[in-house]
Length: 369
Image 1 (cartoon, helix red, strand yellow):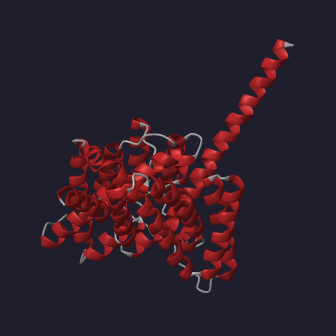
Image 2 (cartoon, one colour):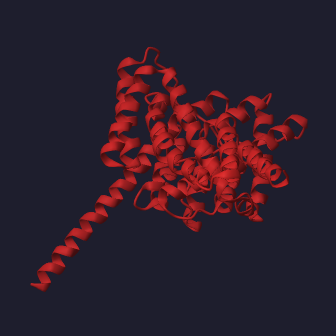
Image 3 (cartoon, rainbow, N blue to C red):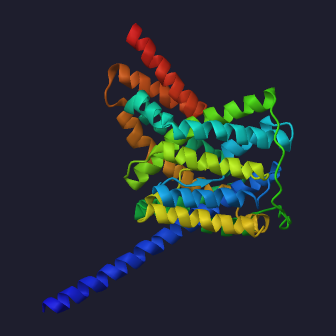
């Protein structure tokens, strides 16, 4: 009888393990599909896709070595900043490289973790709540670009999350179904074919414009790494060392920029909620690296409109991120609630770094007056 129980237990355990690894793969696929449209955005600014593969492979190696949960991927905000501040590709790549070099030093000396300790939980929660509002705004803006895709993504994502309470299924189903909707409703089809690219060492430059752009990248990434890193940690229910992820993403940026590739930064990823978060994240980065190395990004990405991720971002912002963090930011009442509220609002209307800065200023002023 005991032998039969042990056999049944072993059989069920193996089934559970297989189901867990299936969820890991589904999460990796969902985040991969999310990254492809952002990759096309990078191509539109002139960044090469094949060299960017090196960044994803460095991310996979770094996360495997450190056990870091947050993944690095294409991030629309950083791509846009680098793409618009630089007058030409040489300046764009230079500001990415030098900005990443500064961030590497910040991570190596452990300054980002010290910043987290300095600002405290009220400002941190306020930042994360503000990011939740940012995500909702971005999701609504994305829906305006292609209403049929965006609305279908919203409907599928909300229903899926309400039924499953699982972000893995939420991102997967919403992206796939809204992509199918996009296939039948998209008015303009792109015909861009894969481009043959080579690994060519780029010449960097240093001038006032590059320095300004590099500092802009640093300030943007300080806030994003703290806020996005902590949100990924909350999804995985584990502590995240933001210095580790800063070093990983910055080294990846430096190598990518040296060969003409795009910047890749920490993103809020559904792989963090997968059963094996590190494995799922590494799998996603390896798959993206292979796609980029093969030069298939333009061909694959044209079938996945950027609006497909709108529903997932809305669920992540409005349902998962905002309520809990806003509650924690306001829980203390009094002066701490004012600090948390200011941090949240400024983060929502600008970026996490300015939100953090405003919270510190208000906290300082309140301590004086």
